[in-house]
Image (cartoon, rainbow, N blue to C red; front, side, top):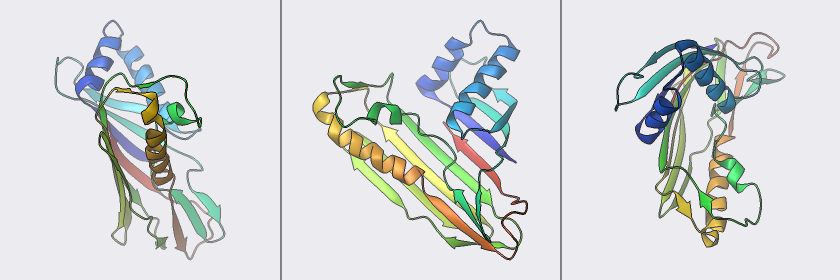
Length: 210
C-alpha cells in the first residue's frame, strides 16, 4: 500500500484541463484513475484522494492517489525481487519494431521527473543496489539513479525529450535511446531478510511523476 502524487505541468496540464472541461467531478476522478491504471502493472488497485489545479489556467494540476499493488514484489525463498521503477514507459509502443515506415511524432516536447521511495520491511536489507543508467542524444536525455540509506530505496528518474517531430533517419538512434530507457526502468532490487518471502512484505512506495 502506498501513495502516488502526480503533477501535470505545461502542455500536459493544459491538455488535461481541456479534455475534462465539460466533465463532472466523478468523471474527472474516473478518467484520472484510468490514466494512472495504464501506467502501472496489471492488478493495481487505485483510488484518487485529491486533485488540485483544475480551476486555474496555468500552473500545475496535482493529483494524489492511494495505491495497492498485490504481487508487486516476487518471492524467491528468503528474497524479494522488487522493480525499482513503478511506472510503465508510455513511449515504448513507438519503438517496438526494427524498422518504421513513418516519422515519429509526439504531441509536444515533454519531461518526466520521478522519485520513488520503497520502504523496506522490518528485518530486510538490500542485497544489491541497481546500477545508474544514463543515455543522451542532442535532443533527449535520460538518467535513473537508485540510492539506499539502510531503511528505504530511493529511485530518481529523469526523462526529457526536446522535440516533437523526428525523421525516419533518426529512428535507429531513438530506438537505441528508448531501449536504454526501458532497460533502466525494468531493473529490479533484491531484498534479503530472515523471514520467509511468503510472508507479508510490507513494502510501501511513494512516487512523484509528471
